[in-house]
Image (cartoon, rainbow, N blue to C red; front, top):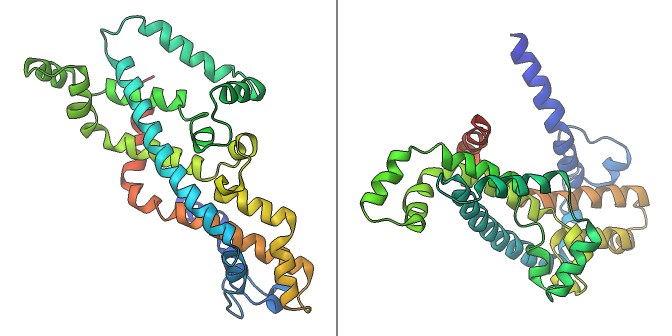
Length: 280
């Protein structure tokens, strides 16, 4: 009974701020100014969302973010899992030293300026690859994949060799089909990271047509464009109300799409994460 009560409290504390933002973004400015919104919207309205979506830059941001997320997640999972599979094979030469070099990057990074100089020297600044490729490979993800592949029975790979499979064949026909849970868990982490990423855009992108959704929304709020448009519609709206309601609406616009993906991956999520924690 105590555990159930504590779990309900944790769920409430976790979900209420999110629920409150949804309710405020769907409520009339009159009730927001009166602080009368709590567990459900009052004076239901979609005006705040109309203001956000009326800006054509939102559509461009959505298009870019979806493209970056799909392409970046595919590239990350492909190269990360292939590197991890190679490191999981017992007969790989210099495996110990490569693992040590990879773990070293967890403790020490090159820094922002060297990273920018590398990206610039490769001609990736102000391109979609300048946003996607920096940081696309995570050492932690490689270690999780490596542990997942190492936990597979060696007999399967021995049988594959008998059937004439090379390493690349064993990867695609044995390792990948048996590691769907790991792919789903790591894929969700990577997709969320790319979806919420505006740092790479801030550093590597100059063309506004290439900006992801997070950067577009950030620029719109900082510049006051949305607030000015909302205030111009009604002089009775307080500036604080406009800013707060628009902030919550933009948070919902940028957060809900990626949250909708989670239920489809939930059954794989816990299993995939636990696989990487069984062995070190």
